[in-house]
Length: 366
Ligand code: IPM
Ligand code: MN
Image (cartoon, rainbow, N blue to C red; front, side):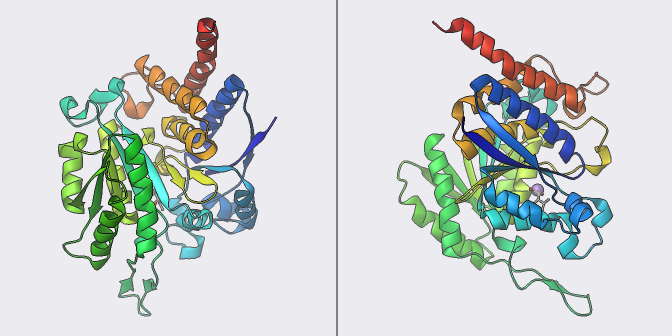
């Protein structure tokens, strides 16, 4: 039997706890659909610094280069906040994204009907919200040179630079996604002020001509930030650059009720990188209270976009929805004072539902 080889990078903080539940879900899907996964773990982030003095150690680099897909937990550790840049956990993540060349970061934000009352926004604005954020991931301010502090330290510089080629390839991902969805792309920029955004807007418009079936409009990022919470149903695919996408995706998490619910897929030419959008949450690490749903939903994206396995991906997503409909809640999405499941219990509940679908499928088979 062919095996899919997955490099698993649990990382820091709550990363290892939520990744253990993601692995449980992957194994449940593998059992049910007769798919073999080989999961191997490697350190990244502060865990990489602890193991090998490098947030993206050589051993991890080599493993990632060989893998069919990469599953990541989270990176970040306040103990390294003052460390030089090459030793910061986040530098490891940026190097990982650059090595894989994963320029398109897909962040689907769909409201679970069972959780509409968990968002601080009014329920009538949230029903039916289903936004796909397409964030450019390997360019812009995160990677631009020159960068750094001036000699005296009293000034600093980062560089926002995009080429038309970088904009084009991520725009194509957004338009193609829109064709499979509701046929609408909203491109977000700051073209009233930034030359880079003017290039962004022109290039996206030009790419859009190849997709006459997709409606394209443009919003300035400040307006987009407001509209995302005021009228979230106005969005289908939201296409934007690296830094704006980072900010808008955390904002979008408010729509679904918790950052702990959201997955992401980062795609390029080769193997994809799959990670929940939440961070390492050091304040709750090691206490079995983190929500594993973002990591488990990430497994669904890994199956679908990383390995082309749509059917098991759907089974994982249905199991998550079903667990929520049945009332399963971790602390972040429970009503205040109500009892909540731990990370592990939630993971077991969902894995059980993934496995169980087999029986219901078998019982309807002719
Ligand atoms: C994210 C995170 C990362 C980012 C950090 C940890 C570097 O916030 O994936 O959204 O800014 O891209
Ligand atoms: Mn972020």
